[in-house]
Image 1 (cartoon, rainbow, N blue to C red):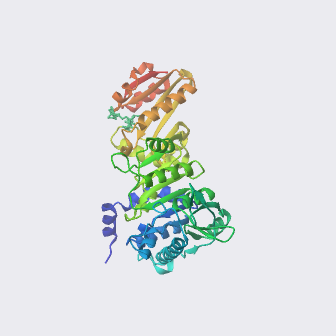
Image 2 (tube, helix red, strand yellow):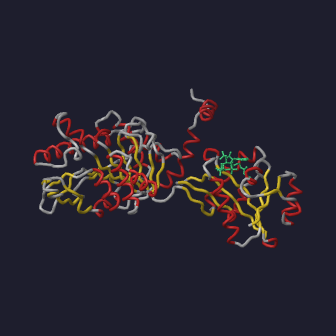
Image 3 (cartoon, helix red, strand yellow):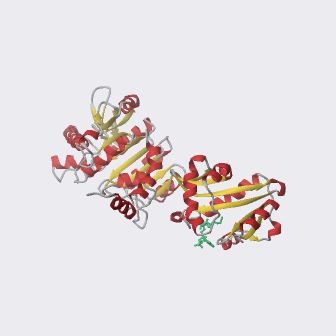
Length: 445
Ligand SMILES: CC(C)(COP(=O)(O)OP(=O)(O)OC[C@H]1O[C@@H](n2cnc3c(N)ncnc32)[C@H](O)[C@@H]1OP(=O)(O)O)[C@@H](O)C(=O)NCCC(=O)NCCS
């Protein structure tokens, strides 16, 4: 028999509640957003396809609109034998026989993917299974690559146009759009296309929120062969200029840079062979592979009422140990305009407040906190620089900070010890009444 007490112990002992809460801003943010998934055929032929399909179904049930572009090289190899040059990189010329292979392989890839997406995951009751409908069609207009350096590329083509309206219509009807790497020309001819190029053209045409590559590697690798967790466009261009990455990685970086500069918000490179990597990348702070964005991921912005919960969560442990003054939600609602938050993706990693004493032409930096899992990355310093800039814009003459534990940190950043008498009069009264005996620091602006 299940008892309440047993359940409570269960919840205490596992991370479910913590993780679910951590995921909630992402769940909220992605509702109604369009994601393009480019899935390598290595993943499609693996025994991980069923688990990935179940995770994809979960995304649709959370309101995400999905377009999937599949690869087919592994199926070509299975049909034609190991010795065949299967990828378009190895053999850029697609003759008639090769085109037939591509059509066959794409057909098998589509059917396998459709079958996997039609499975009822064991954890979902049949009556609550999301009724996913998969749409295919002539979404890609192609043109031949033609003759390059005197060599006829035959049926190798490139994307001429994406029918974004048709894709949008299917997505608006809650259908998942499945696209093969084959396009059609105005003369009715089929052309083989590169998955990367299709992913780029489609995600730009429909202004996708994210383009996600699911391949065999955990993410993009740096010179020490370590997985890079985050990159912005400047860093992508630097990596490309150093010419240190292999051909596949270079192509991914080029595609990422292009789509990020043409309206796509994020590009991710993940392993489709690692169970749960897609969910981990989308719903956790840590992610699982490489995430790329146009601008640096982190920003400092004015706090809003919706941030109060997260700010109180940052304060709670420091309040309990006496590092910071207690602040409740009523206080926060009345003072939220003084706060700024440091946000990365959808998550608040730090906060700071500037309280102004207009009569003394001074300000107090208060409630400077960086989440323990994000410390020593310079975020504290960025928040301090932000408040100094705010204070300078207000033409304040001095900035105060009161601290019981962090005096050295302020001193190392240009503050010096000050006396009670130097504090604004109103603050002196509070100081005396709360008996915390914080140390006082002051910085001339
Ligand atoms: C103080 C705090 C905001 C710094 O945030 P941060 O993002 O880690 O800061 P930075 O990355 O810019 O600086 C990190 C450096 O500060 C040092 N540092 C951290 N806390 C310190 C402290 N209490 N005293 C002295 N130095 C400290 C770190 O050791 C690190 O030094 P290193 O680079 O030489 O290793 C953060 O530790 C925090 O939230 N502390 C609890 C709240 C608090 O005390 N707030 C201040 C009172 S309002």
